[in-house]
Image (tube, rainbow, N blue to C red; front, side, top):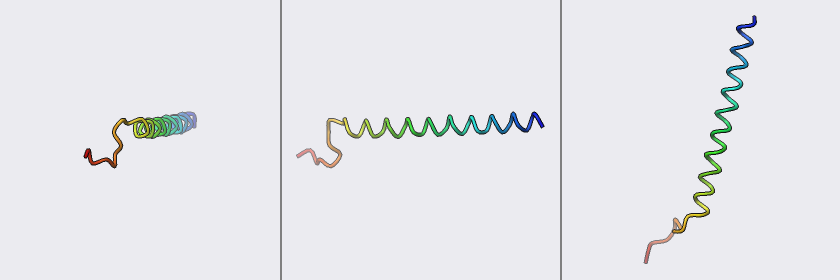
Length: 45
């Protein structure tokens, strides 16, 4: 029973870490998009 609890806690911990990494990546992508010096819709002309 203790092993099952340990595995469940490890799985929950892994999920929380994964979700935090995804949230940080999404925030970084948004920050990069907003602070990009060249607008993505420009044609350069």
